[in-house]
Image (tube, rainbow, N blue to C red; front, side, top):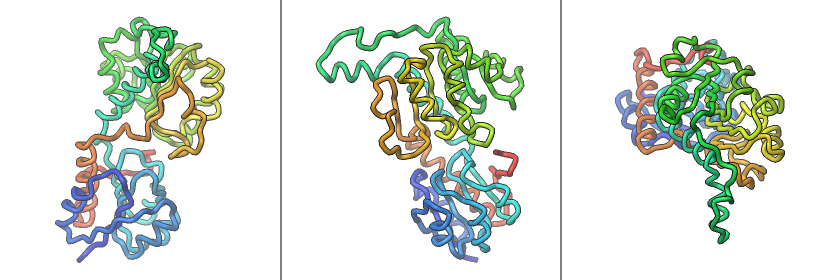
Length: 320
């Protein structure tokens, strides 16, 4: 049987996807689908779709595509796929939970270092012709300060290893991870309020679910120590951006490093104009190697499902 696979993704290497799907006699078609309606139109009669985070796979999609057997999420997060509707429709969902752990943890550290060392302010000042150490003041050393990790999945665990040697105390908030697992990486388990109250810098790598949507709101930023730093490499939706902008403007936060925003790409966000903020275009996942791994992994699992085999990375409603 020949399968039709529709790909709406800008991240994974297309050749890697095609190479894996060749073994199940699949025809691969690349489209741009940014709404459920566009996906339904593009994927009529398809047996599989592969999507990135910008393509919503809603209940309406599963209801309309009665030939669909598998959805490949080219990435880690599953917030754009209705997993319950998929299960009810008998459609398998697969993702790639480990392809960019190294890249995102490194990117989070890079953003943290950039705002901690006032690199945006120094860069703007030197570009304007100034040459003064005071242009980025105040800057504080890491040693003796506290890093708060919001979420203790693979990415923040890798980050905890990378900051070892900086002389920071590490607190971690994750209700699903026991304290003994955190202790293995010299991190101390903390409640959310405790982490906010103590941490001089917070790095967020939490999934976007109802419990975490706008978890970082005005009350959260008010709880953080004055002059704290904030880094988000998770999802823009975990932050109330208006509250974040207010906290930065009022000096409650000293700086922020953001790889994700509530609206991507942003439309005139004040965050883009702030000297104490670094914004990158949801690029934390990226390396040439991660692109290749992403394409091969998601397509290989899609091929397994189409061949009647068990996938390596199945997703279930309990995963979000």
